Length: 99
Image (spheres, rainbow, N blue to C red):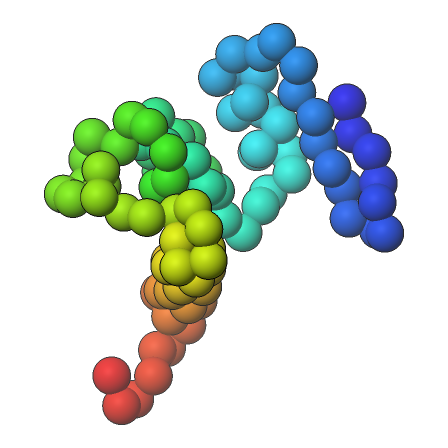
């Protein structure tokens, strides 16, 4: 099901599986995915960056200690999301000459 709020789509999936999710994500073409390590194959197949959050995260060192709740956790999560977007933009462009 898809609803529009202020011009932006909100996609709600109810009682679904990863194949249905793959189809919806491929159709929506998001800039970024946020989820656990189980989203890696989907992110890779569609060339969409994945910010790993939640459980399980089994392909990153120290993931169990990453704080995502509260004020400090929200700041850290925001930084991770923004840095992932910047990294994707850099990879798609000529990059920055000073980096």
